[in-house]
Length: 205
Image (cartoon, rainbow, N blue to C red; front, side):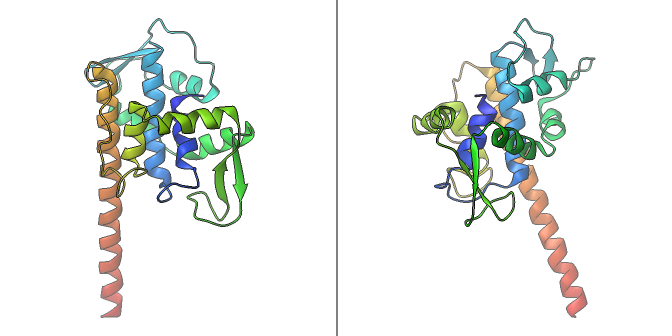
């Protein structure tokens, strides 16, 4: 499976410390897609700009192919941060549907889930076991993405996780952008919560 699908699987693992927010996960999934496109040389980064049209082969994964087709192909090329917000919109829902259709996820009653009252868990498949094994082995890129959405630390954006290959500047750029975007989203949530509480206090006064 793709890095994004592996990330989704470990986010749905029953042992996860807390349910991951759909917004946080969507941003990280968009980053994971971009990392796979870089690895396939479908794109390259020019600083923080995503330059399509590399020599890589077309992605076999449907969602990854959709990501490739959604790239901005005119100059000035899209910034990584802008890609995360644009591509990430409702992306977690798309991955949920895709993985359920593939039989990689199962719904069970009880527990907490960002996708409604049913708990979503990885199925006992070779692909899911491989994804969970990547996490157990501390695969650096997956570990950083997991940490960014709060799977391994105290909350979204709280931990940096292990460092990826320091020589891979493109991957490092994407991972840093994911962390910044998740923290920005959390700041927006906190601001809205404060504004909502202040508005409620006005009516109670």
